[in-house]
Image (cartoon, rainbow, N blue to C red; front, side, top):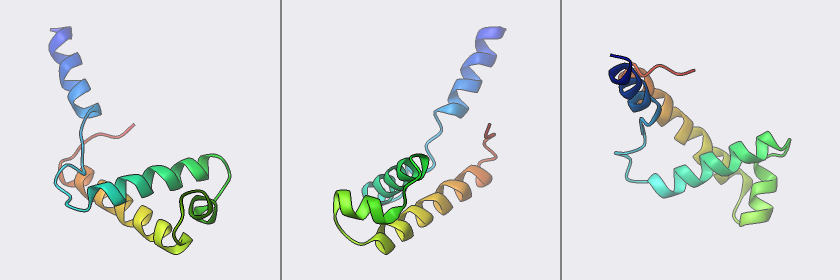
Length: 81
């Protein structure tokens, strides 16, 4: 019984809300890069200096990617901890 519960819980953890998004590479990279920058008390300007491009573009892609993730999690009623 515990094994079945554990497998169900792990399936929720592995949920990939960006699986059906055609612009996946840009948004995933932006979500990860800007989130990492924020974790290090930096901003999208720092990401732009390190990876090239414009801070506004990095920030917009990050925000859009986060919106897509949140929408998919809500739609599928995936628990978030």
